[in-house]
Length: 165
Image 1: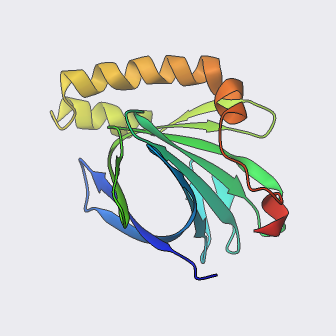
Image 2 (image 1 turned 120 degrees about the vertical axis):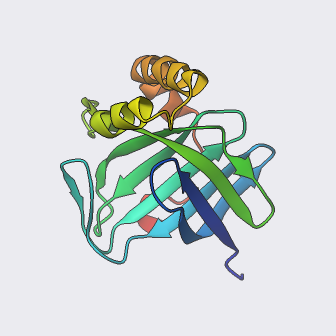
């Protein structure tokens, strides 16, 4: 079976856009799940994401966040990252969203860390974030903090488990 590639375009209010080629794992109306293989070490806040890690990204139309599941090279869960954004546009060959800078990181034990709050506040002060976007971020921050376990229950899972990916 041929792998289907989807381009993720992550637009930013404060720096150039980023583009990534990802593998389509699942698609249904208004929902797309992509796989991204981490080829070089990176960081999400204080957390190191080693080369060889795996990201499973969940995009839903009309939902103002993207959920990333992060797994290490041995496929042990590193954590979950919610990128607060304007609702993604899901196209046939692409997904696009405007990152609103604030991220929510959940360790595997459920501990929440808010990331990039300083960057968000700076963009707000520089008027790169609208009042609507600021209110959207505040509301989603509270909703996700409260509903994280339920959000995880409702996500698509690979039929043979993460280890098979």
